[in-house]
Length: 432
Image (cartoon, rainbow, N blue to C red; front, side):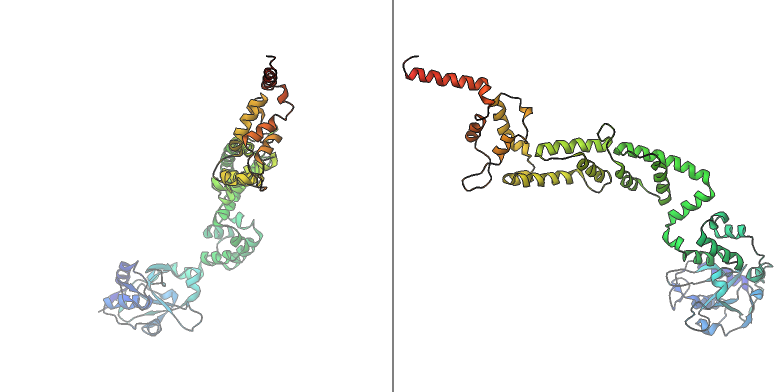
C-alpha cells in the first residue's frame, strides 16, 4: 500500500523537540539522525537500515530539483571520513526535519543555508512512498537559480546596513566577497566572526557602532540623555569634567554599554579642587572627614594626598576606612608607645587630652589653641622611662615642664603662687 509523503512529514513533525541521543531509536526518549528516519518510516511499515551508511544505499536516487516530501536527504558533515554521515527527511520548500547533534533536539532546518547546501550529497526515495508533492516551483531555483541580490539587498538579508559594512575597511573586503559569490547569511556571519574587528569589539560595541552609523538621530538622543546622567553623577561625586571631555565620556559610555559603577570609575579621575581650593560633593565630605581625622592623629596631609585618596574612594577602588587605617599606622609609627591604643580605635588627641587640659589650665590659654604639634605636648607624649622606653610623661613632671615655660610667669596662677610663697617666708620670720 502506497504511503503519502505528506503524511510521513506530518507524523515526523509530532516529534519536534525530541532530544538527540547517539544511537537512540525512541521517538519520545531520544533519537539520532538515522534513528529518527528509521522510526518514522517504521510507523508506516517502511523498513530501512539503522545507519546513515546503509540508508543511502536504499531506494532510488533523486536530485535536488526532484525532491518530494518524505524523501531521505543526506549530507557529508564530517570531512575526516568519506561518505554521508547525516540524514534527514525532506518536508518541502527547501526544508527538512532532522536530529542534528548532541545537545540539540529534533528540528526543522533549511537546505538553502550555506552550511547544508554545500554539504548536500543526495536524496533517496523509498519504494512505497508517493504523492508527497514535488518541491514547489521556486524550490529548485533556491538551490541554484536564485536571482542575484543587489549589494544593498544582500546586506539587508545579512541583518546589516550596506553603508555600515562599507565603512569598516576589513569588513568591507569580506562583504565584497559575499556580493561576488552570493554567500548565504550563515557563511557571511562565519566569515565576519573571523575578522579582527569582530573579535576585538563586544556585541554591545558592534551594535552601538551600527546604530551610530545608520540611525544618527537615535544615537544623538541617547548621547544627550547619557550626558545628563554623567553630569548628575559627576556633581554628586564632586568630579569636575573639563570642557570637551563630556562628549567623549558619553560616547564611550554608550559604545561600551557602561553601568553607573563603570561611569563612576571614569569620573573618579576628574575629582579635583575648585578654584576656591576645596573639593565638592561626596569628595568634599571625604575631604572634611580625612582632614579632621588627620588632625586627631597628628598626621600631616596636603591637598594632593587628599585629592588622590578622594579619587580612589569615588572610583570604588578604596574606602574611607582604608585611609583612616593608613593614618592610624602613621600615628602608631610616630607614637610607638600608644600603638595598641591606636589600633583599638583611640586617637592621639584623646590620649593627649589630659596634657592639653593641664597645659591650658596652667598657662591660662584656650584649649583649642593647643594641638599635637605643640612642642610641649610632643615632649609629654614621647617621654621615656629609666630603661629608655617611650612612655607618657607623668603629670608631676609635665607640670614642672609647663612652669618652665616663660608664659607661665605671666599667669595669674604664677603670681598668686609667688605671693603665697612670699607670705610663707614672712611668716617663718615672724614678720607676718
